[in-house]
Length: 235
Ligand SMILES: NC(=O)c1ccc[n+]([C@@H]2O[C@H](COP(=O)([O-])OP(=O)(O)OC[C@H]3O[C@@H](n4cnc5c(N)ncnc54)[C@H](OP(=O)(O)O)[C@@H]3O)[C@@H](O)[C@H]2O)c1
Image 1 (cartoon, helix red, strand yellow):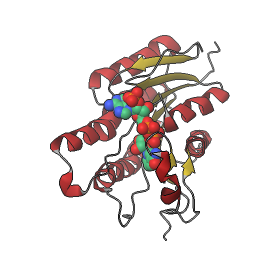
Image 2 (cartoon, helix red, strand yellow):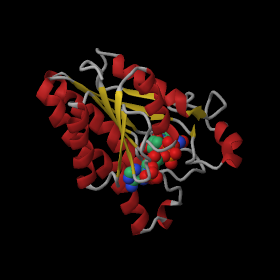
Image 3 (cartoon, protein in one colour):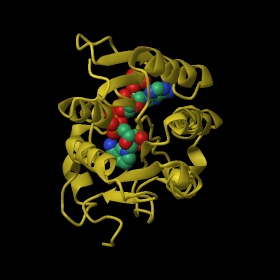
Image 4 (spheres, protein in one colour):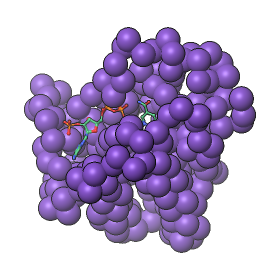
């Protein structure tokens, strides 16, 4: 294990976009702390799996604590864990609201606070958050809870980018369009593809590539990089 090897924490790492992010950073020889509720231990000594609910502050403490204890530092945090509940706004229950706020908002908040505090100790770091292409509504889709939470994450990305720029810590977001992951039933892929100007859904590996790009882009902070087949540009 080399002291110069970088360390990345990836939330929601068990499947979908998060699993692709883990693969992409391993190709670059990063050491990884991978977390989700059902994450399984890895045979790769450079991947440490820490299981837990990301909305729970105790999970955030364990994840950042184990990153420092096992690998010595935190260079990058990828806030990827997120859920989508696609019901008409008035049919969302209090349980639906609390579940989305727990993962999408509290799941960002607690671990980002701890990771930035760790990055401040060595005067550098990068936070990349997977948000969503929520600038415009989609007729016929039920996106209120996604817009409420992911829109907030896009805004806090800019706020934190400014707050921590002088400490050498960059804060960016990747805003995917509808992406092929277990979040969506395959029978809807064709229809979901038509909701993008480029006429197809995104691949999880395309979102992961954008995150890796931002991680290496030393002069980019406060950026919301849309990986959405043109959705945010118009229809
Ligand atoms: N797919 C899309 O179309 C799309 C579009 C825009 C944005 N996004 C965003 O992209 C991110 C990844 O989504 P995805 O499509 O890859 O979804 P996914 O396949 O459903 O994966 C979600 C990940 O989040 C984890 N997770 C869910 N609840 C959790 C909790 N309470 N605590 C800890 N981990 C939790 C899951 O692991 P466990 O079940 O093991 O906990 C899983 O690893 C999300 O933030 C999502 O909002 C996705």
